[in-house]
Image (cartoon, rainbow, N blue to C red; front, side, top):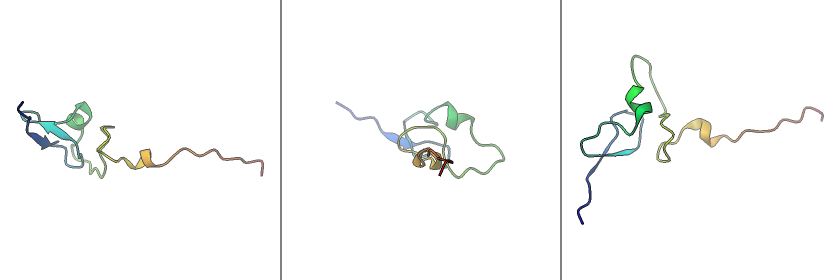
Length: 64
């Protein structure tokens, strides 16, 4: 059984692996880019830690 060689996604902040012959891990990375500076990947794949995923929503009780 041959294993397929994996490469990194062409979107610079992305940490996903992609199979040989593919450039991007998905549409989010393919459509990202342009003139804006990106410091996090928003592809929503598990290898890519997006800051907003680390923060759990909090319930604020204003009746204190």
